[in-house]
Length: 482
Image (cartoon, rainbow, N blue to C red; front, side):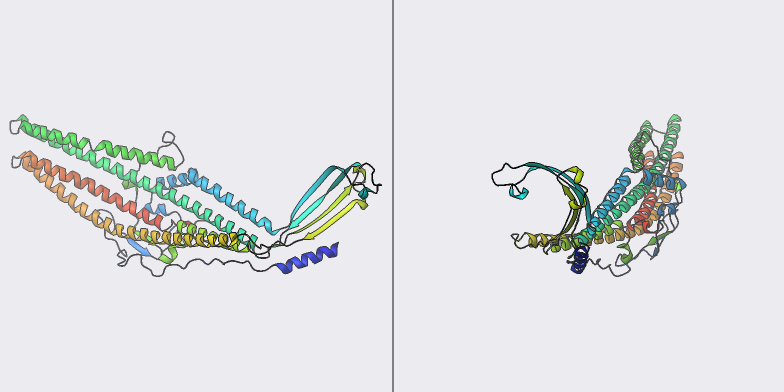
């Protein structure tokens, strides 16, 4: 028996060959160092009161990129969000599920051993039991037990391609977990910056209301001494009422941003409240790291996930190809069989079997070829999706780089407009006090100052938001984390 087993094992080893089907090769990375034709982002001009920013090409992004804004409260909120967000927990569980699928597929590389025990009640043929013809057939019991071993040599790499497919799918889930974490950190930072911006806008509106109150007091004082008209008082009151209407919408936006940040942290708005962020709590990063396009495709989790999906599609072609070749199932068993349980373990009751077979597809109505061609077309679709993901990523980075330049220019222009509007307002207020101008010009100057004040606040906030967006678009530095 041992000689038969050794011969069968040797023949199985000889049957192994290379896996059929294509071997996956990752698509080539894009060439060039620029994201835009002009690449206007080597330096970014100062934007009003904020410092200048400089884009540093071919530099590494820190894993905790949000710390570039130098806010301890922001750092605490982001870490709390990563730890408590349900989307991250779901992605982590999905990754663990995919890893178990890989282990399940690898089980096909090993023999499968089972233990079988059977008890049967039979009526046997007379000649088999040595009885004379015509005698009644006896009823007897048959007992058997023992191990059964089966094995299918992976001659054409069918199981190897299945393991390759499941490994690629597990890699896909890994990058989706990274993408979920990046989305949570990016959204948490964006919401925190939005909260700071909205609080700054509320502060600006409150300053505008204070200016409105000053104008109303000035008009009332002139009316009280007979130097002003009642219409001027009503105009000033209307302006104050209109500006008060600016507060509720901004307050609602602030409440929505705070609620969104609570949900990102994994809490309800009733359970958790974010810190009272203000735009002044953050520092605008003076240097913005920028990866090369060839590095971007190896860093962004959405691109890497698309590449893993492409790899899985390639493995499916190998699976479909291997199913067009023969298979060689092997099995062996050692049983003890007896007519009574008392003699079940006698040496004379030992029965062993050893078998090998071949199953080759001959005719399946073209189904196997169609199945392989289906896998090929699915691979082409995945390749097109991968290329589209890369193009969108490069375009997103290019848009943000241009936006950073425009943000700085806008902030600088809004700052000059604010200075001019404030000076014009003071001149109109002084002229109205001495009777050299009317209330309409004062209100018009006040409205220009209001628009400039809010415009500059929004322009400042946009620089912070686009700086954070660039870090997210670069992949967030997850690859440098411990």
